Image (cartoon, rainbow, N blue to C red):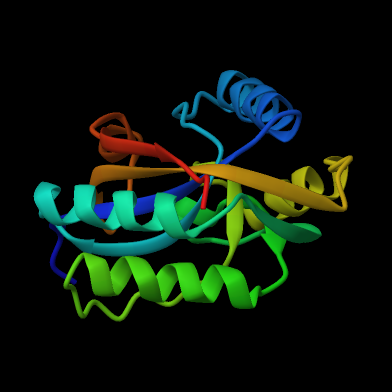
Length: 176
């Protein structure tokens, strides 16, 4: 599979969830020698066009109020960017935001929305991932997201080096 530079659109957690997830991510990164990153849910991944990203962020910020997602479980997978993650329930509002960003960015990427918030990016054995997933308790039944960021990154992200190259190219508060 070929790799390319893309812009990922992230929903950013509001407090108090932001501090909780940031602390979990930082602790896991330290314990497992893994990369640090901001707690987020990826809403869309599209073409590397900063002007289109700015337009998409501005439009979404005007049209959307903070989004609340229902927490389902802490899960794990063999996929690097989903080593350990919090799964959220699908949301019609989130799906509309995904479509709004795609239209505003004038991009036809077929990004499959799977609302989750990663806690760790690390290649590790399945048994270790399962034990870790079972050990983490999220104290929120719902999480509020109140900002959007556009982040330039390599897709697919496969390594710590890839994560460390991520660069925020735009940020907007949702205030609809």
